[in-house]
Length: 72
Image 1: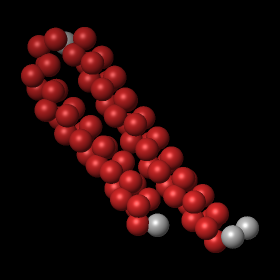
Image 2: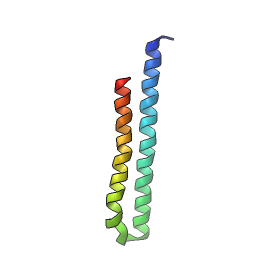
Image 3: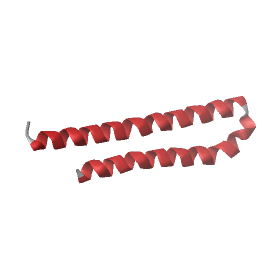
Image 4: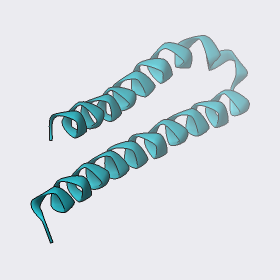
């Protein structure tokens, strides 16, 4: 196999793992927040900002994976 093949495989692996894990984290954050709000509707105001921050940090990891993929 040529070095270009290994480079393409490394890029594919980096973006696949770097996209899957944050996507699962964002889904879990949203699911747990909606479940908490469903149990206690008065807590929606207190949960919304931390939920968005957690989702933003998880999405930042996906963006880092994209940057790493472009730099390979």
